[in-house]
Each structure stands twice: as structure tokens, then as C-alpha cells.
Image 1 (cartoon, rainbow, N blue to C red):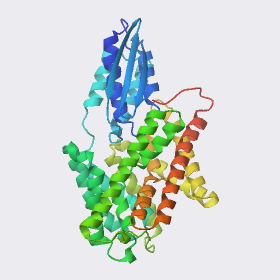
Image 2: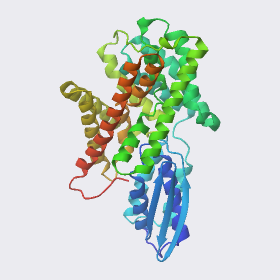
Image 3: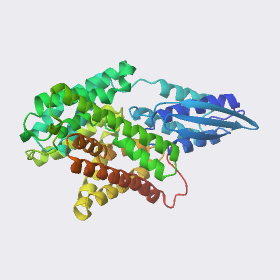
Image 4: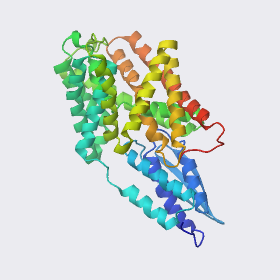
Length: 416
């Protein structure tokens, strides 16, 4: 065990905590609830104190050591695309809390994590986006046509997402551009007859990577937990992303010369066998691992959590309806992942939670609702939007309830 020879200087501790805050903030697409406890805990372990005022893309950090204080502003855009860094930060914080690291050693480890390249090459991330979309496709329409069209359309989405990593200006309007490209190809090639289902149902799996269902639920969870400023800002940003997708589809209609009534929302008859529906979740989980930089060793555990979420949601929905089924599934997923993540050697809760959370698919309802309205179907559109709001709330409350139940009897301990 390393021994500390002196208390850290306020400038040294501030530099370390600012970098820690930036790494955590950059990977906080699922909410900022754990950010402040993690940074404050690291400060205490090193002999200081820290306070944070957090918004989704920034934080005001005040560090105190002895009688000296320092305040800095940290900016970082919240995402969930480097879960390998999330996984690497947890053992670092555990070693700090246990007193096994000095400040210089902790700063060195954090610098390595912060500067580390993605664990998979660009083409593997692109493949992950394709697999992620294909695995989601049977939820929209359980047909071979849906799976095949998604493979083509998702390849276009993956190419754009990969290009955005090289050209940041494209990233600012990536959902809009992706919606335009996907809608044009879908309308010209794959949605020419009603027998293959509605155009929106064909487009959605390929756009699922850009649909902000996670941001919507994270915003609701932040609001429910009392983090009003980050929750409200994240909610506005999620709506903005949905509107980009919506406008992109409308531009695609204009480019192809199709009438807005072409955006009908009717599913085709099922022709996928049961084994294909079961296998789709394996494809989905493999895509999640590659697309979100999850360490490959965690794939089997994440797959079990995905199947658990699907099984609980299916059973509870059959017994008590969709809203109750979604709430129960979110509660069980949150409770199980919270208990697993409580072990020091286990992966962080966010990493365990995300794949199962994606199976609840709330953001796609918002996209369907907007396109139904644009297609002249106001009843269906408002129904989908209302259902989205209800399910977002059910998921957020379920995630909070699961964490509370799992932490019962364990005091205020939180997973970093």
C-alpha cells in the first residue's frame, strides 16, 4: 500500500479532480446522479473536499484543502460511446477510497484512461451499429424484409456515424443527415408497397442508434431525483434530437417526391420464426458491445441482463399491461444491476444497465408519433407521443425504485 507523505496542494488536487470530472461528465449520457458522489469521494480520499454544480455539458468544481479553495469550470459533451473508460474509472476510484493510491499515481492512471484510444477499430464500431440495428429490427416488424432492409439502411447510418468521428461538423447535424439518407433509401427501395409495412417502421431500426430514448429517460430520472437543471436541459436536448430526425424524414419525402400520406404506420404480417426472435437479442447485445466500446469480457453478462429485462417486461405486460410491464422491467433491471455493481470488482452500474435499458425502446415512440402527425394521422401520432411520455416516466421511476430497493439496508453507499 502506498503511503501519503503530505496533504496535496489545492492546485494539484484541483487539476486531478477537474480531469476526473471531465471524464465522468463526458460519459454521463445516462445522467449526472453519480457524478457528484464520485468526485466528492475521490476528494475526501485524498484529504480534501469538493463541491459540484452540474449541468449536462459542464460543471463548476470547487476544491478545498485545508484553508485554501480553488474553483474551476469543466466542460464536456455527455455521451455513452466510451463505456470502456467508465469501466476503467471504477477500480481507480476504489483504489483511491481504500488508500492504495497517492495523488500522483492516481493522476497518472487517470491520464492513461483519458488518453486511451477506443478499444475497437472504426470498422468494428460500424459493424456494431449495424448489428445493434438488426437486433432491434424484429421489435418493429418481425419479418425477414425488415431484417434485410435494416442491414442495408443501418450500413448507411454506420458510415455516417463513422464519418462524424472524423469530421466533427457533421456530428452536429448527424441525426438530421442520417434521417435524410435513410428515409430516401427506404422510400425509394424498401417501402414501395404496403405489404412490407409502413415506411416509418422500416426506417426506425436503422435510426435507433440516433434516437434519444436514453436521454429522455435520463432526463426524467434526473428530474425525479431532484436534479432539476440537468434534467430540464437534457430533456430539451432530447426533444431537439427527435426533431432533427423528424425534419430529416420530411426532407426525405420531399427529395423522393412522395406525399406525406406515404408515412403510414401499418405493420406487415409476421414471418420470422421464434428462434430468429430469440437470436435477435444476441445480435443486439454484440452490436451494443462494439458500438459503445464495452469490454468484450462483459458480453455474456450483458446478454443475461438483456434476456432478463425482456422476460420480465413480456411477462409483466401480459399480466398487467404495457406501462406496468415497462415499470416492473425497469425496476428489476435497476435493482439487479445496482446489487451487482455494489461489489468493488464488478463493472459500473451504467455499463450493466445500458443494454437492458435499450430494450425498453421509448425513443422510437416519439419518432413514430411525430411522423404519424406529419403523415396526416393525428390520432395515431398523439397516441404514440402520449405513450412515449408515459413510458419515459415509468422507466425513470422504475430505475429509481430499483436502486432504492437494492440499496435498502446499505446506508447511503453509492456505486461510483
